[in-house]
Length: 378
Image (cartoon, rainbow, N blue to C red; front, side):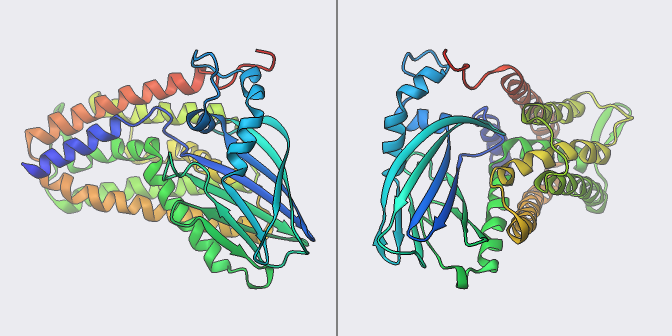
């Protein structure tokens, strides 16, 4: 009984997550070291800043360019108070410059340019990143650090706020592991990806016979179906993740995010009204191509080049696959154990699929039609 309640609770919690489901909170920090000077660009999501310091001055639920511009001073003070830059152990003085608004794959971001003046030419650069961790412990800071023709990358998290960068001792393995962890974290926090995968996997422990769902006769039958689905999804999203990250193919982010939401709805609705002609492994491959573009969104804004780009791509993709396999490893034994029960067929398959479809349609409307920032002058 407790196992059943646990599975039901998992589905309920999944359906209660916020509608902004695809891309978790992150910011993009680009630094260029030139001797004793550091030029910085910091892209921070307006939705995160609104939660932290309040940007919606009239409380109407829609941000305008005028409201953001009126808070430029507060944005700069808030952000720079949560970043410390040191050169060879001595603190550098930070000063804010102009601010703009830019659109990333998941919405509007403020672009804060700033300058760090250090006492002498920098060899060891220390960064202490504390943005948003007090209100969102899962926030990530994505760093691109350039100097003298080299590029380094790193990911800041609540448990990894302070990092040192020395060109001669930069660890490729450390960067790879950073992106591997971020890929696994991204699939676990990317609720639309999880729900799409679960929608395809829910019927894997069942067979359709004369219009009714019946328990699969053997674990091997269910496992083979799962392997087909996961393999098709992996091949598809790995392909488009690579193409998008290498900037060989680019699609409008609003289209991608909207179609990802639609794919979740289609997969869930097919569990309620199955189409005999629709093979779930084929749906996993076709829709997986879209999800690959979604996965690429977290890497696209970094602008990595050369080896850093390849390292980020491989590490992130491996992390996504490990995170995905962890989901399957948790799901399959439990679903197989419950497959013959009315609870699984009615509450998990039917009720869960209906809840997922409803949530996906909310995402679809939000992503396709809801503007994130009114035009300048609004």
